[in-house]
Amino acid sequence: MKRWTKWIILLAIFIMSIINFADKSVTGLAGIHIMRDLNLTSTQFGIVGSSFFWLFSIVGIIGASISDRFGTGKLLAIMAIIWTIAQSMLLFVSSLPLLIFSRVLLGAGEGAFSATAVSHISKWFKPESRGLAISIINFGNVVGIAVTAPIVVFLISSYGWKQAFFIFGIFSFVWLICWLWLGRLKPPVSFEEEASKQENNLKINRKDIWKALQSPIFIFTTLSSFIAYSLIVFGLTFNPSYLMKVKGFSEQQSAIIIAISGLIGAILGMVLAIISDRLYKKTKSLWKSRILFTAICVILAGILYSMYPLVNGSGSIIIILSLVNTLVVTVNTLNPTVVISLLPQRRGVMTGTYYGVMSSSGIFAPIIFGKLIQASGTNPAGGFSTAIYGMAVAMVMAAILLFLFGRHKQPVSTENDKKLVNL
Image 1 (cartoon, rainbow, N blue to C red):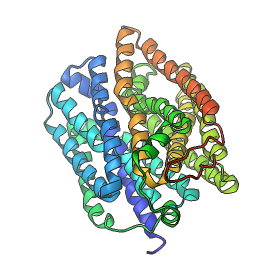
Image 2: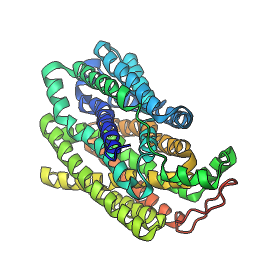
Image 3: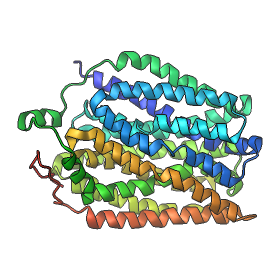
Image 4: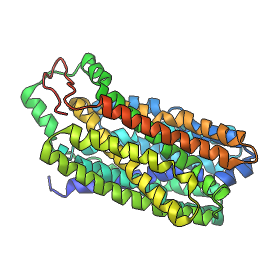
């Protein structure tokens, strides 16, 4: 197997990651047009945003678990098929129920993507280089929001929001055609799998999995990601409207702000991931290089996000959002590496459960945001600010809990593998 093969696979999943988050961002960017054409209230639009996550979390857990048995490559291909159908059908949507159905279908198709992508990549990259690999996937997530924002605005203004959805469905189909060849490539035996075959040939049973899922490390790592994901949900669903209705920017200006802050955040997030990787190589300690690193990022993100409603100039907003995006990207990069380390033989189950719980915040957050905004009446800024401050406080609290209960030398053992994870 040639050395560059793993980078080709990573590039393909990086592109799929761009499509994945571009699909999510279209609804928020087209929000004003959708609400006007379908005559929706803020609460109804919040339900539209929430509907994407109704099956997202459940399918994320089940799908990623199935990937352990049937293969991550096949599951990625199935996802691309569903994305194509879900996005293309919006060309014919003319009512709220059909719009919700299409979002539910897309959510079901995307639920297992992050866990499956991380699981697939972890077969190609060793632990000391996974931080960078996963950060590249996360970079694709941000690019999906940032780079596509101006494109989506252009498509909507030129052709209409329905046509914009349809075009992204075509992107998914083109990716699928390419993956039918790339997905056949087999990775080398990964670091953990090789060690596992040498030391232990027994299957991991349910008790082993349950012990790992009950560990304080898993619980509070996942909690921090759960809170951080609400920031992503707000950005996908309501942030474009916030920039236009409250901050006074035009549609194109809002798209540019989202694009610039997203790209800066993604690039800086990769830098922090590399620093974390180097720290891991030097110390071999998950506590110092991942968990403590993440706790610091979470608390800083909460503090910085609380400043968002207080700034108005485009430059100040870009700085705040760039720094917050950097820290959130880093959290989403490092936390999966912690989860995988708890039970590497069942990375699909571990990452699937992690992403499923994390993304479940998307079920409640959009509805809560929508109700807060609608309840503010003629003062939408008040509703938006309440939502933002609530997320900021929750981030700080999550960071404190992660620091207190995710402390080093927390043993995580299983019946079949008596080794303790060095945290």
